[in-house]
Image (cartoon, rainbow, N blue to C red; front, side, top):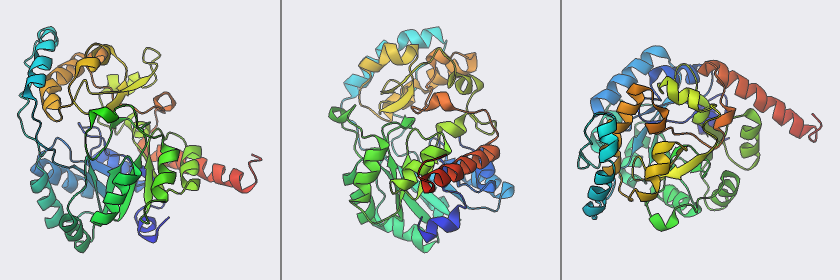
Length: 357
């Protein structure tokens, strides 16, 4: 592990920033206090909301933590496809007794304002999803004392991350739950994502900056495996989604191990961008027809997802989850970090003994 990362986290365990209310101050604080690196998800929040959550988090821990920011998205030209999808969702709106959202509710997720907050009152770590920040932005964060990471799903994207000046790259395998952090959303590439171990190797041979591995990791032995493959740390999302500190609805947490939900799938049904979730009715019925239009589709379906969650209807929610979801454990976040660290130590000892344990 690089010395910069070592200073940030005693255990090579990073809690993935899960947007939509899952990764809040309580979860991040619990992970950081236990020796991992907790993360706040700034996605879908206002700049002031992010500032208030950072303030809250600092009141809960003095350990390092991170904040994740979504990159602005390019303009989407085919508005007709969004309108067609809206017509298809009219029955969902009637069922949940709500209106569809406005697809033109904004494209940049308040990026500039959030970056200003993070520069005005710097945090230890900032990560970026859906693209690469400018070299100037990364340099300003570095001068402020912030360690920066950027998600990549291919070796080519990792090279772009290194060239921009980020301190480390998050290698996101296709196993990961939630949105794939591709830098460009190319529909022709749907279903072509790399598995994590192959991706780590390709990225390690392409760049010189540290790699944080993400995608389907649920056990300490898996952390040991990605470290052996060349990663400096492992990022886990679904594993922490089930914890009491997670802001995910109870029905979402329960679905992770519910035998009704036997598999995950990458879908555009809920947001217009490929994201891995548990296969439910909404995904099956609408996934094949959802256009590549993010964040328009995300805005459009937002009221539907909220209404389904309020009704406790798992069949209408975006049940983001990685491929290892059946391995989720109902443990407090801090205890989960301790268990993962113990499993990691045991796996490393087994490796040292030639796998005899």
